[in-house]
Length: 112
Image 1 (spheres, rainbow, N blue to C red):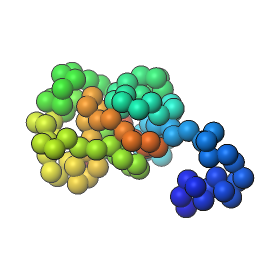
Image 2: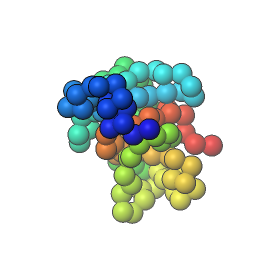
Image 3: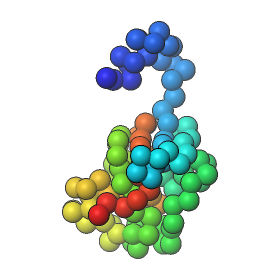
Image 4: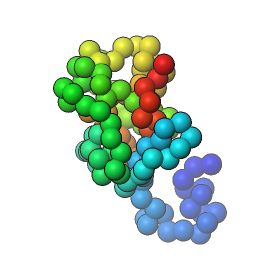
């Protein structure tokens, strides 16, 4: 069901429904924070009180590799050294350079 359908069903003003970035470890919700355009996944995680390890903060090392469960975190045109096609197919995103678009669910565990 789309967000618009949910708000229509609940008779909620869609202007007041704000996108949220949720951080999970498997089925367990670790924290969530309102979506802020332009902020990376790591910055959103810090706001939510969730620790995503980082090292290089440039997408090179892969220390911040997480799994996209739901939503949109666009990839750069050229994959950085910390990502490859297999990881991307499995939902892999780099938290230090990944900038979400709206509602996103992130599993802090990397794809295996």
